[in-house]
Image 1 (cartoon, rainbow, N blue to C red):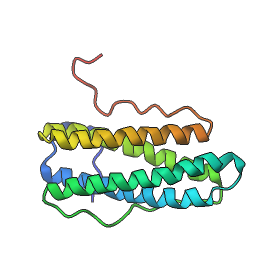
Image 2: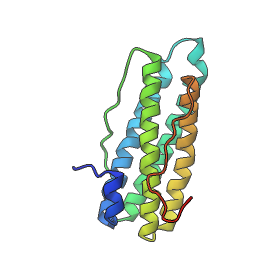
Image 3: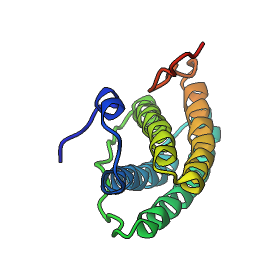
Length: 166
């Protein structure tokens, strides 16, 4: 499957069929997040990681909720939700695991921002609202991870520059 960049998505209006493909990619990323958060929440060691380990366990449950929402949207569009997660990175180092998660959250946020726009272009406004709700959680996850790493939250920027925007 060929990955389409945000720039390419700008030039080509998304079809319902392409939206299904993209949502299935998102679902694979949610599965990856569930697995990663389950594992990381249990293997992070040390007093400095106790709070974030508890947060990661909560994140795992939230990611499951996201997966259920995305799977429902794929079914609504008349397709079968995927059952395959993206690969999960592991490390012996706690900071590496948190960094993997932070990177994945950034990718997820960028993709869901695109998905909201694509859903709206197709007139799927309720679906866009469902994804907006997921975005709220994903951005909270990003804040938790950046804070645990002692970093500022990465600037995501817009995936689309609005015409006539400020």
